[in-house]
Structures are given as C-alpha cells and as structure tokens.
Image 1 (spheres, one colour):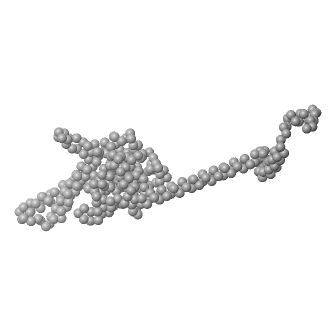
Image 2: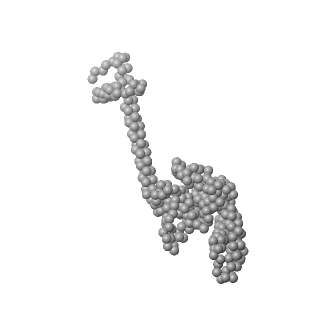
Image 3: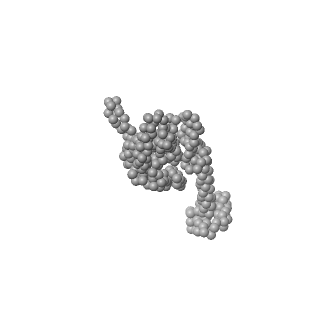
Length: 342
C-alpha cells in the first residue's frame, strides 16, 4: 500500500481517524433533518433551534399533563355530584347516623335520641315541608307520630342533629305552656345538640365546617338566640322577640284571677250545702274559678319542669341522701364551656 508523507497529511490523519462512508452519510442526513425540523420552530425558539425536537416533545408532554389534570378535575366534580345526589336520596341511613352521633356525644342530644328510640310510635323521615322540621299525629291512645325533616337539608350529622332536636323538643316538653321560658328551652336544646357533635358558635353563620357555603337563616336564628348569652338575658330577648309572656307573669295574672273568683266558689259551695245543688247564677263564675285553679296547677308544674331543666333532677341515693343528677343546663354550661365555644 502506498505510504504518503507530508506534514499536512500526517496532521490530518492523526486528528481525524478514518471512518466508514456509511457514518458520514448518516451524519449528513442528521444535519439535513435537523435543518428541516428547525424551520418548523416558532421564532421565539430560534436561539435553541438545534433542540427543536426536544422542545416540541416538552410542549406535547405539558399539554398531555394539563389534559390529564383537567380530566381528573372533571371526574372529581362528577364524583362529588354523585356523592351529594346519593346523600340527598339517602334517608333513614343518614337519620340513623345523626341519632348515633347525638347519642355518642353524651348530653342533651343523647336525651333526644333516647327519647325517640324509646318511643317506637315515633318515626323520622325526610319530606317536602316548609321550615326545618314539623310533625303530625294520627289519633289513637298511642298516636303514630311522624317527625318530618325538610328534604332539602344537607345529609350531615351536624345539621340533622339540630333539625331533629328542633322538632323532638315539641314532643318532649309538650306540657310546657307557650312562654318565653319554653322558647328559651327550645333554643337551648337545639343549640346544645348542635354544639355537642363538633360545632362552634364562633363559626356562625357556618353550620357545618364541611359545608362552609351552606346557610340556613332559620336554624342560625335559633342558635344565635342562645349562644353567648346567660339564661336571664336570653329569656328576656326571646320573649320580647316572640311576644311571649313569662311564666311568672302568667302566674301573677292567674293568681289574681283565683283570688278574685274564690269568693264566688265559696258562695256556690255554701248554696250547694243548703240546697244540695249549685247556684245557677254563679255557674259561669265557678267555671272560671275552676279553670283558673287548673291553670295554676299547670303553671306550677311548668315551673318544676323549668327548674329541672336548668338545675337537674334531685333524687335519693341508697342511703336516703338527696343528690342531683347534674343533667341540667347549668351543669352542662359549666362542663362544656371550655370544650365548646358558646
């Protein structure tokens, strides 16, 4: 083989090794392909024209990622809608869950749940009604009672507990006359049942932390009439707002009626003693007197109910010592003041 010499030739052979022609052909094609791809790039990327293929790939991956995230968001929204729809359609199961939560919380909510479960003639269901709740009865010695919850209420225990307590109170304290004290007791039961299962008055008007956008002005008004107020202030404000008399006012008025009518009852008794029948001219006044005495008994019973509601129930233990069961509202306030913000 011919050996060529020369400085120029020797330098060239020492720095660029001999390569097959196929390599130089592939190299040429690569340069041509790069030039063609570079022409497709936007002018913004002319400075990195040599990386055109990589940039296009990055943009494609970004577009695919965004599309994937959008699909996930759409799927999540659809799942949330389906969950809300299923919860809205769910009835007894959600009511049962709320009653279990009320019982587990221990307090006035527990009393409400126990009352409903101890009365098999009471059923609770969702219905198309005005307001938060209502109930109706179908006659008989033991009437069938249906406690109805507004079907538009969210199916969460924090809200359903308050709605159940709102209506159950009317059955639990049906012996109470329509007074400021009864309205106060109602607000107390609803508010405490609501607070006991993880709510705070500081979040109002939010009724459930899991539903920050949900509002219910009727329920909120009941809660606000009790929270952050002592009993005396709340009773006065509720009575004034609802134009309801107090128990003491009713007792004072009724006592005056009893004193005024007592003489007619005494006259009728004397007349009956001598004639063996009532005086017809006094019949109406005697009837008023007896009605007033019956009202007096009912009002005194209401005072006792209010006392037990506020102070708890006194009982005798096995040794005959009178004790208190600490089930009253006052004891609840003391025990829960640091736990629940109200």
